[in-house]
Image 1 (cartoon, helix red, strand yellow):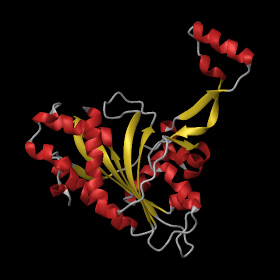
Image 2 (spheres, helix red, strand yellow; image 1 turned 180 degrees about the horizontal axis):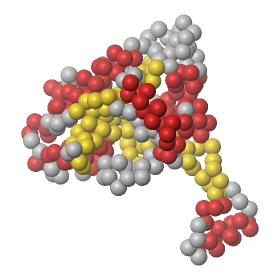
Image 3 (tube, helix red, strand yellow; image 1 turned 90 degrees about the vertical axis):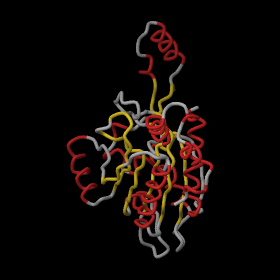
Image 4 (tube, one colour; image 1 turned 90 degrees about the horizontal axis):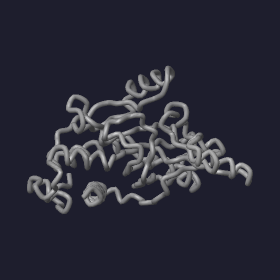
Length: 275
């Protein structure tokens, strides 16, 4: 049931996104470690990043690994970090290939990307999964704030069509440590991030199911993405947590989609929901 519901939700997102005519690349759920380092992710969110390690030892180390495994000891001590990390968001693999094209055209670039993602969430809250699927719409170099505002309207129309309560508000990422509080305050003060939340697990603390982010020229400076005029491009993105949306639907309409309100059951196949 869940997989069918996720497929229908992504099809619904496609209907709302159709007029963007965005490129649709697909990437594995991993990134080059060097690219994530360039992005600045480690500065604010090191606690969420998952790294990929592998065995690179000799036969002696292999025998030791097997012995540790048989004895219930930590056999991962012989693992070494690779040049790969797990993707913390679907958009991270997008920036290097866009930069490799050279300067953007005057039309900019719109990208629709989807991927499995990983975040090392130290939480037992059921909507905060460590592995989850994310859909993102990313805008490069053209009317970034208009793009974000348009997607805030679309997302609210989507949730309204699904007949769920919602709240749109300025937000911040869960930055790490003392320096993270400065980043949080700056992000909120500049209104760089909004979230559309729906009550799921805790009615008093709605779950963020959509995020709307304006990066200014942060990623462009990190990866060397320039406009046709030679200036660093601004970027923005809208992210959808597909499992969170599915859980929200089941929370508000029940576990049996066949028993949902007729209007909600009709939405994924209906053009009437387009804003």
